[in-house]
Amino acid sequence: MTDTTALERGIGAAPSRARRRRFQWRDPWGHPRGLALVTWIYILWSIVPVLLAIRFAFNSGRSRSAAQGWSLRWFWKDPNLSVFHDPTLSSALQQSLTLAFFAMLIATPLGVALALGLQRWRGPGSGTANVLTLLPLVTPELVFAVGLFLLFTTAFKVIGLGTTAQVIGHVTFSMSFVVVIVRGRLATIGGDLEEAAADLGAPPWDVVRRILVPLLLPAIAASLLIVFALSIDDFVVSQYLASGADTTTVPMRIYAQARAAPTPALNALATIMLTVTLLALGLAYLVFRLMTRGEGGGSAIGQLAGIEAGIDAGGSK
Amino acid sequence: MTPRWIWRVLAAPPLVWLALFFLVATYAIVSVGMGNVTTLFEPVPHWNPLDWNVGYLVQAIKDVLPGGTTWPVAVRTVAYVVVAMALSLVIGYPVAYYAARYAGRSRGIVLLLLVLPFWISYIMRMFAWTNLLATDGYASKALNGLGIDTLMNRLGVMDGNDWLGGQSVTVVLALVYGYLPFFILPLYASLDRLDHRLIEASRDLGASPFQSFWRTVLPLSKSGILAGMVLIALPMFGDYFTQDLMSGSPHTSMIGNTINGYVQGGSEKSLGAALTMLLSVFLLVFMLGYLRSMRAEQRQATT
Image (cartoon, rainbow over all chains, first blue to last red; front, side):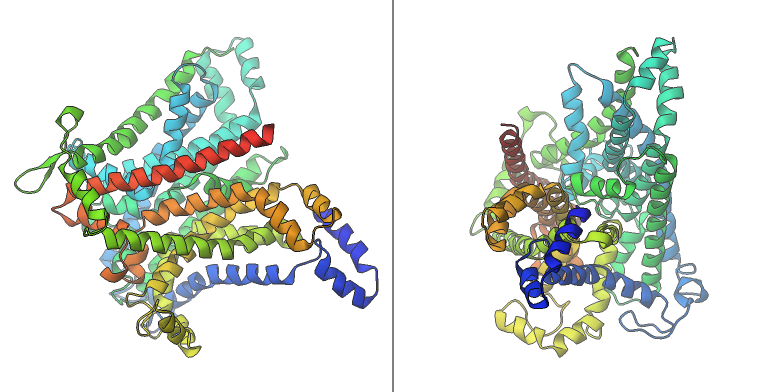
């Protein structure tokens, strides 16, 4: 596409200056300044507020709405109010990390198994299984959370609300993401190697363990980190399944205190969470790229974008 | 050839998980909505359809009809979502169009910046605005300095000059801000796939740039627009936290707030479950309509 554009523009640019200007207006391949302007204003609008919120985290004063010098006071220097010294903030961080850790460890193997099963399983029941896998992705998060909340307060009272319920909730909505990622990878691998191994006499479990799992490693690594990021960012499910102060997560803490005019420690907490999420995703991208190097094919960033764009109708964030 | 049974064995545990924590959970909404309560207002779900009690559902339906207590909230929710979707289209289309067709060498970075908001927690992005729209925040100072607050007051979508003090305009713009990335990416994907030869052909056949856009590009990107619209409509209709963070006033509350209040608030869980059922059915209509139009499009493409 870029080549054509350059070529067409080259042809358009040949005539005199005046003609060229008129030409640009008429030339559908010219660079539309207006569109570029709208796009960049939108990008600034979408990112700058977050950058400012991060900036205020480093304030040396107490304001969350104006720049007041620079310090690390709200991260750990302040003996009472900083993220590391205020127990309500540090416990939220701990709870978020705990949930993300367990969600990642449970959702990934389940999702990988489901993806393998769905990819090759033909026959009665497979269509229903496919639909069941995709449903959590298009269910509005409020409906999803209300359902789990009522489940854990009635039929599954044994489990009850709290950390276990929160982990289960996170696993349930992130499993489908893993399935989408792994199935994408399975489609690229194809079935040849697996068939070869089976023809050479490998027992079924060995085919899975020694052929498929190694080939799926990049997708598994990416899934682990993406589940981690999804879990850290989640608000609605965590809130509905929380049982009290010690199950409060970072987004819940921000939600509860955002309007209560506290200190920039809340910004510092949000900044830490954002850094952790972006690190996990950056790592997912790098790992996927490194492990699939030399294979060509689509870009990992496009895949990450596609995963969110294509399927997440529930708005998991 | 790997034997077939192994795939079913692999798929079984995750499917059981989904059945328990997704299907049964969804059914729990129905059982509680069609159930009863104890004297302490604790919900008693009726799992057997033969025992269903339609009282709460009837109540919920009466509430959302004209004259009911939830009716104003329902109307407001639809109005907010419709305006927010229209604004998303007006802002999002040019952005997606530019990123897909004209970004050229900066395409990688533009795409990265368009994807970035996905991965910043929604709550964090709303929180950033509570900093900026506080009475002494940068954004509210700038907006009031430019007289935008007066303009909004004239238009009747704002009352006074406190941007976080229960303003419809703030809630709608926050919804746009929050969900616009979810609209832009599917649209981008559909515009990116668009066959450029068709646009060239329309131009060669004498269409003006506007005609070419209106009669070629726009119809071809209809499925992308629809996909984006559904993707943002679903979460917007279930949203309660945006309103809580950006306003918190009962004058701007949405249907999500009503459900949230019933279910998490205490004594009205059954009514909340019934209302959730109504909302789900309403949203299901959306999703089915969307699926049907996608299928029609596919059929058209193959013939």
